[in-house]
Length: 120
Ligand code: 5GP
Ligand code: ZN
Image (cartoon, rainbow, N blue to C red; front, side):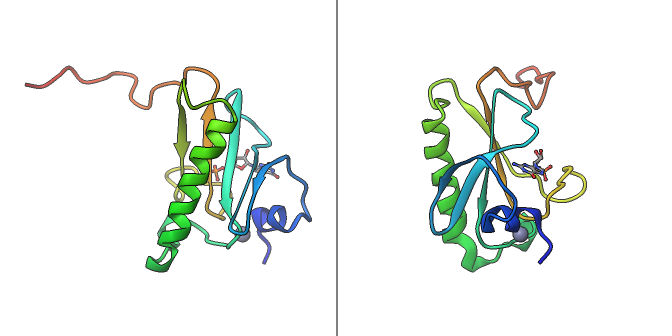
């Protein structure tokens, strides 16, 4: 299969790996958007969040728990971090092998720059 992240899993394309186990790989993003920008991916090829099935539930849980651990190892736990999955065209997904971005190391731009006034 002609998939960039499958090639990173197989090692035919090099990456700066920070973690690997039987199910997942984590590595530095090639074009970092924050002082710390890591990607966590399953070794299994799943194109997008839309393609996950019920029997991927344990894998998805594993990915999130590993993301927590990897973020802590990267020193992000205290100040916090953003965990992002882009799904499909409107979200700007570029690589169609599911992945989570771990972004941190600075105060990130808020998703909603103009918070609504409390409505009570
Ligand atoms: P997406 O927009 O699909 O959520 O994010 C894909 C990410 O993969 C981008 O942040 C991009 O910089 C990163 N990326 C693309 N090609 C490579 C590569 O060859 N190596 C690494 N390490 N990251 C890549
Ligand atoms: Zn793939």
